[in-house]
Image (cartoon, rainbow over all chains, first blue to last red; front, side, top):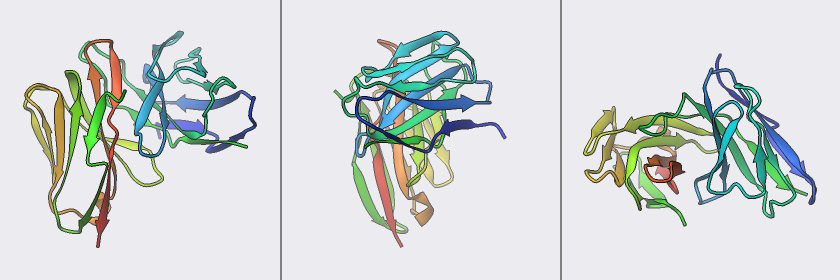
Length: 116
Length: 111
């Protein structure tokens, strides 16, 4: 079955450490996204990528970094510069963005990150 | 600040009652999407509206896109317990090429 796989489901980090969240898709989608979800605040866009080796910052990119070396993979690194990293992180993918805007997104099951 | 607001934030209804959530953007959107997230789950795409004034129906769900393409609504007729979850709108803003999710409306259906 095609889909998006995020791992791990739960992640714990010590203060001052960087941590990388994995996102893999086998839907052959060009575009991939990372969102952060906090209670009562909906989803906020961290980064998105429309094509391999290209990505753009979303609303809350500070303290995060991404790479897009392969079409199938879009890992997110939460750096020690992110002061409040505890949240639920969701990865999504879609077919290529068009001039008309966004396309329907397919989401992974998410990774819940907590600070020890 | 938040670009796309939804009201209400929470809604409790008796099973069988109707439910509506409203989505309002500060700027014109190229299209609007609606997603449903069940408790403990991930958002699942429901529908996309593109044209000004567009109305689409999916069984008991009716979706509208405003004439000015700045607002949208989702109406559920005769809610069922399976409708429980958080409903999000999402849209692409023409200026700045940015994509925003709404703040979400959490629906609880009391049997």
